[in-house]
Length: 366
Ligand SMILES: [Zn+2]
Image 1 (cartoon, rainbow, N blue to C red):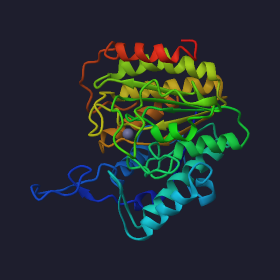
Image 2: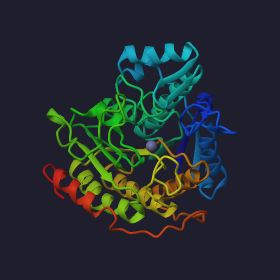
Image 3: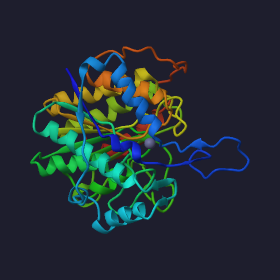
């Protein structure tokens, strides 16, 4: 089993500056740090895939820029133009924590276009499994709203592309540590794209992110029941994540029977991420990748598109990505976890999983 890795060098052009984490520089600090969403993180991810034990199983493919007409399959044209103009004027803080520079426009086009190139490779049968290593990430970007480091909703654009190619049902599974509110918003009233987000309970974070990520955000109209939110408490760990997959996500995907699985593939649920507190280790990520593989094999003839989202621990995220893709290729982790030490309690998320089951069992056999 092999994987096609889609990459475009312009991903590195998106500059987000430095300061106190995602905040402006402080005169109290001697050394500012890079904004958490920086090029270093994906350079490390690319390197581990080229240098690590998975390398012989990965085929390198070229990404491309998206056309504006591709972005507007889901995004409001006036919003797309406003992002282009804002970058063209030199950039700055677009919304709270979402910072862009002049060439971020090119990076955003490369992120969306490279995701679409990966999707097309799967849809045309060139490969069964494609992974788009892109930035800026996408799953917080709503049809007319930038949010949480995201400009365009890359994974949602992949799902929409698959629908327009003729696939009847597409599922998006998002295990980034944050709620995939942008993907949710793109499909909230639709029953042809199942959106599933497993995330740390963090709630709304202001006007750019009004969605709460709670299980009772189930979709509306025809889409009621087709938006699935599984909130998990801080410290959930490997066992809790896998229980959520086995007890909630897999049966729901089973009921939906998609023709393509899109994975919004973040690593910020890792145990050392500055943006999450979920304590997932490399072995947990391998198991998530393996679970996605099993779903894709069962329902989608093996077809799966993975799209890079968050993951901000600059070394450990790369190791966790390697582990995820190892699982997706039905392999063992193959690298020793350089950091694992946390004890794991599979019962840590019992209450939250039960609460989500109460809501979701109104729509699905659980
Ligand atoms: Zn995230």
